[in-house]
Image (cartoon, rainbow, N blue to C red; front, side, top):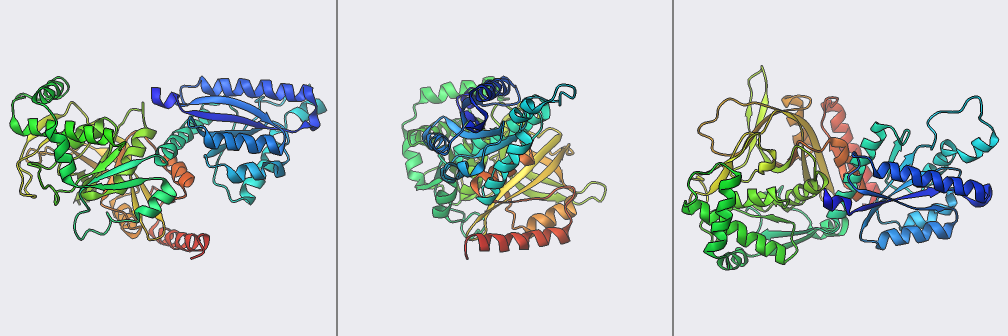
Length: 494
């Protein structure tokens, strides 16, 4: 949360000189009070900074230009206290590269029925000015969030707070570096994608490094460093034998990998069990531990999910529920409760664990390497979202499906981290829609974020967004996918 509070959302107010200096002073005073009130709200995790009352095209342009170049500023909140003729906003909004939310509120909550006069009407014109501002944003085809309601209302503050988390994700996306240790799993389609387009649109730098680079970094780790990390394992998790050589080797991978990632500015990474030259084990516990520390991860070279995991972790900082790489594995098709058992061979983040995870060593069954150490745990019951990113050729598509996690029966012979859930609206429709949308088997799962937060993020970065939820009907969903294809082809002139 401390890192989030270092990020700023600038609060800017639109007005004009027509109203005179006294009115503009009141506009400024009211704006400062609203900004201070929002900044004090626990629902908003970032710092809200009142910037200025903008009354001329030059002021608006310079504010947007300054926002673009300020590293702490991750977005704007715009409020039209009075009527702000929106032709003044064209140049500024046309160059703005940060996301913005249009807060359609007013200083007063209620109309003062017995006292309202023309002075009051001239000062409090949000209903008037907000529509003028909204028109020019739509005319310019600008993506933005529109939030309607009184600024003291808790629902408004929660919606705004969720949007600011999306803006944090946008900022992270535009500065994200992803390390690929090895290449993608052979012959797998969904883990592929256009890395140049991803950097152009999303800002991601996706770089390859040979597994040998990781091995060199691991070789620099001392036994004393491994001993210290083993003490952490004993203190924080269920571990009886800290002398186990397989667990110590995972500690060595963790330390070497973190050292390499940090030295090169990487916040996300991938591995591939088909590409382990020089390693004795597939990074299991090491990958889980690094995810717990905030790094993004994708298995089998899936750099898109690695990036999404990292972005969702940054967006959900300070929230309960956690976030992890995930994979849909197998179905429970009992008509009483059709559900999905989701897991992975090793790499599920303990931030979503129901109880303190245990560290265990078991054979992997594939890859031809030593038995790797891993966390074993269940995920608690509750509501979550399952999200994925796929490359549709010319654009990315984000698919989001809210799910309800339920308690599985005992799984004594399945030594992995796992979650059992029922997708919305049910398994039959949820799985069919996911497949029709081209959804990957790799996902990013969170019990902290909601659908709206990811939808706002997708809109900020210009990624197609489709959701599978309780209202989803397959016939309508098919039409939506076709309409989306047409829109993105026309929008890009293809």
